[in-house]
Picture (cartoon, rainbow, N blue to C red):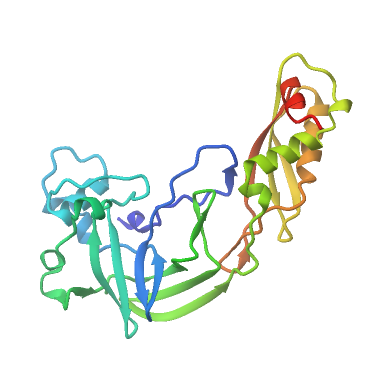
Length: 283
């Protein structure tokens, strides 16, 4: 069951600007030295076993997990809670403890797991030593955590906590302070206005039907767009060349740092060459 431990967030290198996005998964809450951090941790293997619960039809491993955690209570499912639960953790004197397991809609249904029932005598003072955690985990400042294009977790303050049998043995700090967002990526109207007012309509051949060119692009660590690739071409190369030219002229783009390194993200955008667009953005 090792695969269950992977973070339930897809880290796509290619991200559509106008496409369909995955929903960012809400992280667990970790309290450390009075700070509330965000982390993605996992529960012991036994909670994923089917021999401890009876389910008529088991289609997903999460059915087993939820039944084991909440004793058959009907919990809700939400797109930002793919695991079916949220957990809270606390580090005390470098020891990691699990302090709570809650349903996805806890604030509505008030359903939470009974730690004593799950861990028996291992629960002391309402918490249990998380000695099953043996991994390096990326930890975020919860107040600064955001999601690039609804998928990729980004935070100026980012750490790597290394646990050995639940003991915090090392902390690595990453400097993501060079991260910045562009007005053009944050405001569709600003981006579209730039694109369609920059197109050299006078040098393009007249067309009866709209022509769509889809381009993928990315920026370097200075925010300069330096890579543009045609994903869907026009039969007339003039439109392809104009699409590339205009995208490269966008003055500034996002600069993203993850774990202290520049993260080159590919964006995809369609450009429509039509009489309608020309008139709409006519200067």
